[in-house]
Image (cartoon, rainbow, N blue to C red; front, side):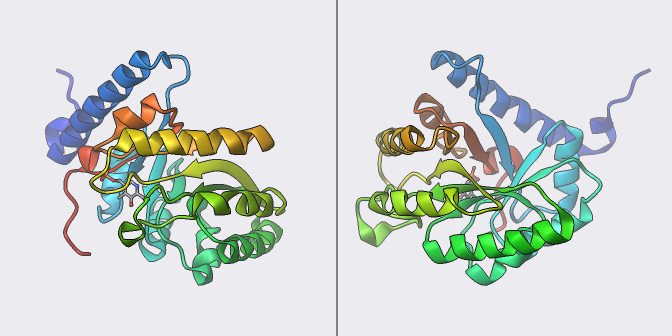
Amino acid sequence: MTEHAGDTDPRLAQLRENLAAVRQRIAAAAAAAGRQDHPPRLIVVTKFHPAQDVRRLASLGISDVGENRDQEASDKAAQLHDAQLRWHFIGQLQSNKAKSVVKYAHSVHSVDRPQLATALARAMAAEQERAGRAPLECFIQVSLDEDADRHRGGALPAEVPALAEQLAGAEGLRLAGVMAVAPLKADPAAAFERLAAISAGLAAQYPDATGISAGMSQDLEAAIRCGATHLRIGSDILGPRPALR
Ligand SMILES: *Cc1c(COP(=O)(O)O)cnc(C)c1O
């Protein structure tokens, strides 16, 4: 008789099922967009969920996870140092956390101002000297909100060129592309179209900076249609987060 690990760990079985459903949605959306041959990378956003869940996801073949708070991410990365995982930092980041973040992060998706880029470059110089790590992938977070009152973070589109120039010129950093969160109560497709246009402008000048980090549980289909290369999916895989904030 063969036994699946899910038989004895109901949480693993649940994650496997949720993951299969999300992968199915991604495959369908990629096929509909004619992107079967270059589907987006799935980053599972594990914020607020325990390190044990991240371990379960790793056992299910997940290689990329996303976190939005340095303390939590740093603790989990330490607990999971033996797993082959890429850690993506996706939240608002204070410059004084740069030193900590570069110790575990493969990428930062939320670079939104020159001071943060400077802090990351400085931290990477020290970290590369210490540990010889690969360059930090940096996405410029762009605000797609046309109403300043409902700002969900990010640089204004007009600020992107200067930030791109700074990131592209910084040793230890690699300009990977753009990132955005769809504005609340607006059509995500229209917002992601604006992001795609900003991305095209960036890639025209920096041919390697073709990344588009967009698409969450609610809007991954629209994001894939608009060319997302990195999806950040949390609740549809892990379930609801405890309401801490
Ligand atoms: C939490 C979070 C996500 C994941 O959102 P879900 O709706 O749970 O899929 C994606 N991106 C960012 C920036 C987040 O903070």
